Length: 600
Image (cartoon, rainbow, N blue to C red; front, side, top):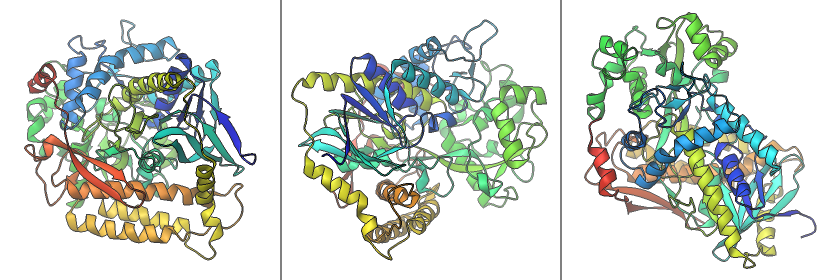
């Protein structure tokens, strides 16, 4: 293959966010020749947007906190659809991963005693989020990136992987291209770790950046792996809604964790109207009781603004639909009347500057206009809880692209500890897999490389065809309007019909120009992934006839504990169509099941 750039490694990590960097570091430390390939620039990752903190039961603020409570909170937040083993490993290992970051140079905020400070977040029983102001994700990326560079791990920036290459039923490597020059590249690697993040760009209003087009989800499906929990998409309650140029940009949950409250257009603190039965034993009934909680968290129930994200997003959505929203289609998040200007600027510096610079709003003096924004997908590659390997030999996944850990809904702060815990595990086991092969490494076949090249170049051979930007806008409209926060059967079926039409039109996309510096070509490749993942979400959403976590059916508003509480939905792909099947939920052992029965 003389016309291609070719490279050989033991472990190839696709994605350079927190999970990808942590996986690469672990694989390198295990002795594997390791490389990272990323679609954008090193450090340009969704991890940076996780501002509030990293969840870990270190007990620095409340000694009563421990891994058992964290496990229970995670399972309760996920509406008990989490893979119990992943939730257990996560809760047990998160503190070590945070302390490890500190040893590598991460500068966390401190308690008066000099310990790592921990703040409150929705769904967590105790103040548990280790933080760096409201820039925690940025500090984690900085620390991991510095460690990666220090270790001398190879990084291929601004490269896109279009195809995973196999030798029989084993991963053999990956095919992609340099986004700047358009030159194709082949990586020979018996272990591939997917760490590509989420799927948010399939929706019109999203906190996700342009990179999050479901690449890893689609690569896994096309290689024969399965996805789990794809119907569960988290709409973060608080994204900016004005001006239009910044719509969807995240407003950290730390604003509510530090005392911010939600108000409608009437000035009413409306979350007290939306406390579900599942959380009534833990949530304040009155404003006075909620306010006392910030002074005496041990003895008072938490404010309703700190309910899990799906509950808060649905409440905001309902206020807007019933005509009590803000002028620009959101509600108000008020911390100005609750905290001093000095406190806000010290605890939430990024939020202060974000609103001042992007919306000309001084959050120390006035409320923020916010609304739900597509933020995170709980669904992802079905992996073994201990090794993070998919059903395809040699294919691993970690971070948002992996499913199972969060069940029906992710608690805030769990994403950062998730990517640290399972990024390390994926890297460790990917290295072991490659090393155990010895000389029996899978081979890359030239005909597969030629097929991948032909597929990538297909839009250049079509004249006068569909514009990829038009298709992108239509796809985002379909998912936003028909498979959004509230779903009903008729609208999901309409979405599936429109997705089928878009699939036919995508086969006739046309690209002008050359491979160099061609964003339309990049989008045409991304759209194939966006469509496939959107189809997976819609199919799963249609089949699950209940409301649970990040999946709300307007025609099935109740949670069905007897039937749907005992099974997950598994998505597969045969090269032509997506298929969804039911699968029994793993049953936790008695000692873990007993933790879920505890009231607090």
